[in-house]
Structures are given as structure tokens and as C-alpha cells.
Amino acid sequence: MAKGLDVGTMNIVCAEMEGENVVFIQQRNAFLELDYSDLTKMVLDNANVQYVVRGDKIYVLGDDAMKFATVFRKSTRRPMKTGILSPDEKEAVPIIRLIVEKVLGEPGYENEVVCISSPANPIDSDIETTYHRKTLEALVKKLGYNPFTIDEGLAIIYSELADNSFTGIGISFGAGMTNVTAAYFAAPIVSFSIARGGDWIDENAAKATGMPKEQVCAIKESNFELKHEVELGSVEGALAIYYDYLITYVVENLKRKLTEVTPPQVDFPVVLAGGTSKPRGFKRLFEEKISQVGLPVDVSQIRMARDPLFSVARGCLIAAKTKEE
Amino acid sequence: MRYYSASFIFAVGIGLLILGLIMIPVFQLHYGSEPFKIKITFTIIGVAISIIVYGISQMLSSKRGSKIIATFGFGLSILAVLMFDYYYPKNWYYPNVTYVEIIYALGLITLFSSSFAEAVERVIESSSKTIMKIIHHERPAEVKNKREEELPPLDVKFAFPSKADELKLEIKDVPIPSDMKPGKALEGPRIGKIVKMKDEVGRDAEKLVRVRQGELKVKKSDSDILEVTKALKSMEGRMGKEDKKKVFGG
Image: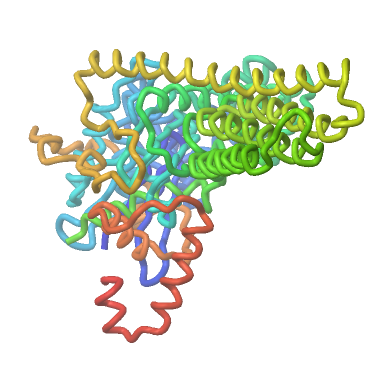
């Protein structure tokens, strides 16, 4: 047995084998702070809501935090920001420890191998990812596991490009960051991240339209489609503009980074994953940008991951299995 | 793939050019030769030159814009050859001759220009890369631009953390604070949305091990991969359990 753990800004996903099946356990990486009262506690207990009590506060965790945020008209808080542990959130480490512990479960045996996804260092920000990576490794180690980390983009290549000898480009459009890796025979030749993702789109679309960020996020995650025609003034229009900007930014930086190395002259398929890549029309828009900007490699195909939300966790599970004794 | 098709185009052009040049002494061409002989010889030579330059241009260009310009230049020169075929010999006089010459020359200039621009860009990129290498003291992870066959199996240590990368600091447990009391729903061992699906993670992990050991090669196109996969699957289907283990591992 081995496990793959995708620790994202929005979701924490664990992947593990159960016979011939892969089981994914997903939990929102968020919490909601409420004032303590016996009545609130009773309501939450009756509704089987996941929470912890600390002093005069109740912290509702994971998916339940998102649901109750609407009921209580409050904003959720996140232990992570722009792909790493949030330095502004003092409860980040204990809360993320709790969520990771409950998603990962107890190890099946001592020192069970766990591969954890980690963002690459961003090229457009001074964020450093070492502290985040080492903290997560330490948290998981303390649970009795034997952890190691790989870049998110590489995890996508492991998950989706087995039939291409793990050669190609994996891009994870996450909530906090966009992670990009180009690999040749499973070895990364380019790996970087961009400190922009779904949250950046939500924030800017919310600012532009004067809508609350949560509402913009809800529209984005419901039935949003990226179309050629944009209705100015609408939330959908603002979302489309920022999606277009983000994709252009990613493709231009990918081109720049690939030009810095000399990529081998083989076909490079591109796989897109992550929650931010889920709207309809995303792949088409990405294809258009690639053909406009042009990459210094032969792109044989562009496709979505089989399951954009679970792809990183699946890639981590594959990597973990190769380290199993 | 681009390099193979460009080489093929170039080779076809060279072949045609040799054929056209051979035809000059074979037909013993001179000013008064039969129009048919002159027409066929110079049509072949004209097309051959265009194809050769187009092949070179395809070899160099990687951008969509350059490819479009090169194809346009190639089209112009072929149009000029077709015009020569149409006008020669009955209407082969001024200004038709000038039109054909100008169109052919324009076609070749366009083809050469696109190749030249691409070559200059590559020279600039290569110089900037050299500077980058000097700055970064020749980073070891860089992969050299060689054909896949020439590349030795890669050392993929950098895909996984090395021993030196392991955390040596003894980190104290990050306990859930004692005053943090979990609610009823957190009493179970695990929480979260569960999705179960049939998957071949084991097969992919085996492949990853084989790739890292340099046992699998990258294929040039998806159709090649499909062919190899089909062949392997049919082989696997015909094998007994023990043979499967020997051949495919596991």
C-alpha cells in the first residue's frame, strides 16, 4: 500500500488503492470561524457537521465550512494561500494538520510511503516553497508515514502520460497557483509555477463587477462556459477576460522557460488539470493561445486530464508506488 | 516529426533537381531544341528548386507564422512554374516572361526570407542560452539537443528527492492544541467525499519504474505508441501467467 496526497489551496485529496480500484478522498481545505454557543454546537452536532471547538470559537472544517458560509453569510478562511501555507493565518498549521490527518487516515503499516504534491517555486513572485514543503513532510511523518514530495506538474505527467513514456507537459491550474512541468522520460526539464490561479481570477472578477468573491466563485463553479463572445459588465464577461489573461500569461511563460533549455526534438503532448481548468471551452481557449504564441517544441496534442480534480493525487500515488519496497 | 517530413521534402527536391540536370545532356538541350523537351526539363528544375528551399524552410521554422509565409512563397514559385508551362512556347514573350520571372523570384525570396529570419532568431536564442548557462554555472539538469536515439538513459535523481534533500532537523510534533475539542462528526477515522473508480495505477507505476531505468523509449507520435501498445497487449493476451511475469514484470 502507498498513498498519494494532493495538498491544494482549495482541496486536499488522498488517493490509495483498494483492490483493483483507486479510492479518492476529497476534502475542502477551508474552515469557518463561528462564535461559540451551546445552541450552535447542538445544531452542528445534529447536522453531523465537522468542527472543532477552541475557547469561545467554533471552527467548521472542510466542505461543511463552504456550506455553512452561505447560511451564516460569512467568508471561509483558508489555511493556504497562493499554493503554500498562509503566513497570515495563525490557525493554518493545526487546522491543516487536522484535515490532512482525517483525509489521509492512519498508516496501514509503519512508514507507509506517501507522495505529497508541492508547488514549484513561482517565477513571478518572491514566494519560497521550501517551508511549506518541509512542514507538510514533517506533519505527515509525525502521522507515521514515510513522506516525500514531487512537483504538481510532474504528478500530472505521471498520472496522464504513461503511454507517452512520461514525456510531455503537465499543467495544473489550481486555485492558488498554476504549476507547469515539462518532462522527458519522467525527468523534469522545466518546472515552475505562477502565483496566479482560480483565486486570482475570482478576486479580479469580483473587483471589476463589485460582486462578493464567494458569489463570483459560485458562478464560476456552477455552469460557467468560456465563449468567444463576452457580455461586458456581467460576471461571466469578467471571468472570461481574466481566464483569457491567465492562459496567455501561462503560455507565454511556458514558451520563455522552454526557450531557456533546449528541449529534445520529440512530440510533447500537453495535459491540462486542476479545478480552474474545468469550465467548458477552457481547452479550446488554451489551444488557441498555444497556436497564437507558438512553443519551441512540437505539441502533438492538447487534452484535459481524465479527472482534472484527482489527477495530481493519482500521479502522487503512482510516484509513491514506485518507492514502495 | 517536423524534422523527418522536412528532410523528406528536401530529399525529394534534390532528387528532382538531379533528374532535371541529367535531362539537359540527355536531351542535348539548346536554343532550338523541341519545346516539349525544354518545357519538361525546366518544369522539373523549377519545381525542384522550390521544393528544396521549402524543405530547408520547414526544417528551420517552428512558428505558425513562418510556416504560413514559407507555404505562401512555395505556392508563388509553383504558380510561376505553372505559368511557364501555360505560356511556353506560343506566348513566351514580353510581358509574360517578365511576369513569370518576377513571380518565381518573389516566391524564392519569400522562402529564403522566412528561413533567414528563423535562422537569425535561433542564433540570438542560442547566444542568450550560452550566457544563461555561464550565469547558472552549467546547470546539470539541462538536456542536450540530440536525437532521441543518441540520448543515454537520463539520470532522474532530480525527479525525486535525494538523501541530501531529506529533512535532517528533528521537528517537534505539531499537536492539535489541547484546548481544541473535535465535534462528534470528527470522531471517525477519516472524513471527506469518497470517489471509487477502477484504475490501472499499478501498471502505470511499473511503466514509470521502467522508464526511469531507461527501458522504455519515447515514440515519435501517438500512432506509433498505439501500434506498440496494441502489439504488447496482444502478446500479453497470448501469454501464460508465468511468462507474463517474466516479460512484463510484476
